[in-house]
Length: 194
Image (cartoon, rainbow, N blue to C red; front, side):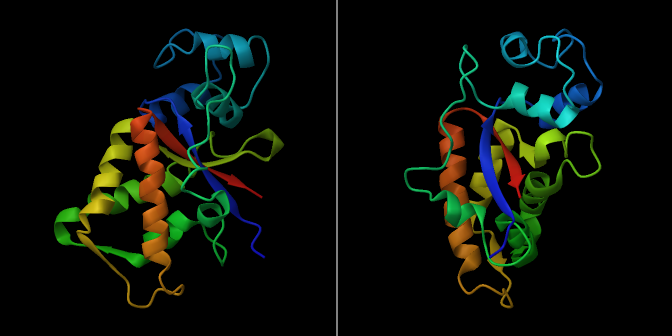
């Protein structure tokens, strides 16, 4: 069975690259962060030296004022295994990138899917200690935009897709997850687990 497994995790609604760049700058305090993350900083960082990927994770992941993680996006209506693991050596989002053909007026869909699966390529926030791998992330605005682009069906499926019905099922699950993120006014990050 494929060892690649991903989750779509809720994060603060912010341009993920502005926070990733700030985390990569080796900050020593929460001052000058793109938004107020002092509560998260006090709970998870304080005087610890944390690598950029783990810093991004602990500061951006959805949590309450006590530092307790919020509920995951999957659960009711979305099986974690169904979205997180598909046959082959790629993620569900990579599968969509390979098998969705956008219409001319819907090229933004590919940008958003690629941002979700590889926005952090060649960035200090991609890999961290303890095996954390953050593939990409979307702001709350981008979550809504991707959901609307997927729902518009202003795209078609590659007739040579290798998993019969795979695109349709992945899109269905992804839309459910994006709706949950939209209802919580949050962004999302795609995290890889091996």
